[in-house]
Length: 179
Image 1 (cartoon, helix red, strand yellow):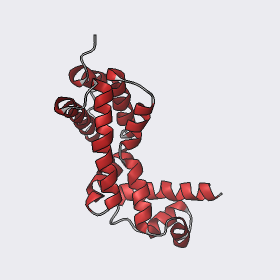
Image 2 (tube, helix red, strand yellow; image 1 turned 45 degrees about the vertical axis):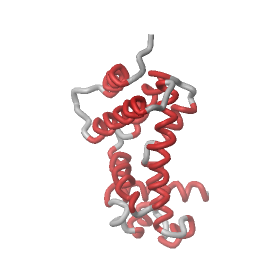
Image 3 (tube, one colour; image 1 turned 180 degrees about the vertical axis):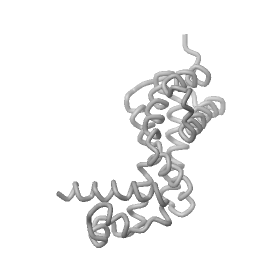
Image 4 (cartoon, one colour; image 1 turned 135 degrees about the vertical axis):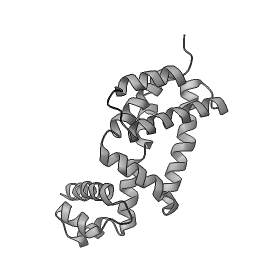
């Protein structure tokens, strides 16, 4: 029951934050959509900021990168895994909105800034190392270009571009030269 209630609150907060942003979203509306009291929200999350950080953390692509890195893929297969999972995650308009809200909230939430730094720093380097065998400037630039292309596609999903074909093309252009 405790986990179910927490999940209902997080689901409602995800909807409300995606719609209103983190700063303008009223906790009263989260409570209403979750079907719980405002007090119960604050029993699970001591402050609105705690709820924001939890929802925003899940909106960033860290989970996509970690899942693919944990699968032991290397080279083009790693980039393909990341690309397909990224486009799948952000095909949901709520997740797209939350990702943008989360990135913009890093100046107000130190924990989010650190998470984004970890994602765009340590994890990105690990992707470069596993995909290219090196994490030098050239490899990091390729991985950053890859993520930029994924972001652009997610923000404007062209009807005439199949996501899998798009990822395949990106990997061909930006991925490692494999025999």
